[in-house]
Length: 216
Ligand code: TYD
Image (cartoon, rainbow, N blue to C red; front, side, top):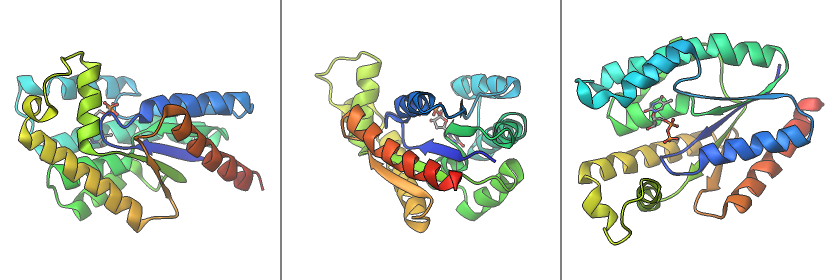
């Protein structure tokens, strides 16, 4: 079985960039791998992702939202992740079960134990071998998001983002940190405010150790 490694964090934490760089590193080491993501990595997932992106055109309550993410995961695990692991590939996955607990549980206020239980239907017995949590303050995340959409630097983040939204992302961040503290052996908390190369250095050190252990 290959290693299953997940990448988590709030929006703008840089995880997608880091997944790409980690894949380049595995390439350079000749380690066969698969990069994948949630939501949206299967044909069903692509439909679900489109629905989630269009959420402003219809009503979507937190419970229904949870089931959409879980449906995406159920298909993704069985069609993509497990077959790749069975082939001995290292799987790098941009978001997984922890995202549902952090976003739908801590963020939207659904009961965390219930989210966890329902996630077991979706993920089955699959758990990440290692999870990188790219942590950064919500303010930095918002600044990055605003830069990405090209808005003027003169507008303060607090003016552009609903207070409610800021509070939501704070809860998600706290949720992730809570999860990481409870499972220190699985989680690696990486300071996401650092330079891209420095953050990648930390990821690579961890990957090298992990791959060495897996070879034994
Ligand atoms: P993602 O594609 O990772 O977006 P970004 O790269 O901008 O962070 O995730 C899309 C959104 O879906 C993001 O807001 C987090 C959310 N999400 C959940 O709320 N629950 C989940 O279980 C997953 C997998 C994602």
